[in-house]
Amino acid sequence: MLRAIGLFIVLLVFWLLLSGLYTPFLIGAGVGTALFATWFGRRLSVVDPEGQPFQLGWRIFVYWLWLAGEVAKSSLTVARIVLHPKLPISPSLVRFKASQSTDLGRVIHANSITLTPGTLSIHCNAEEFLVHGLTREGAEGCVNSAMDRWVSRCEQGR
Image (cartoon, helix red, strand yellow):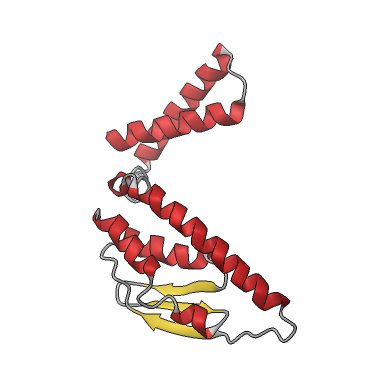
């Protein structure tokens, strides 16, 4: 029930932010639409811990800030490579075991790798990750990385 209430609040706030007009009719329409979408989501059984990972708490916001910095640094690195006259790329694949213990943790880690310019998660399961990198250094940087440690801390609450 807590997840349904959380979903309702998020949907209503999203409606109000996009609306920009706060007349009684539009607020009522927002409440009605958010209630309907929440009810429909519960009927479809999509209101679950993966869809609303409250267990991550405030740590996910700290992680997002850290990830934004990593994305910025990687963007500069990729721009430098692309603008270099000799285009010094060395496409590489690496396999490694990630330290996450849950599917949610592995998904966050794989998506974070893909969001970071120059790297792409190709395959992810409980046993291993397969990552493609624009350069060998970029690909190897995913093995035993700070990102792996950050996601594990996030998922385990440390």
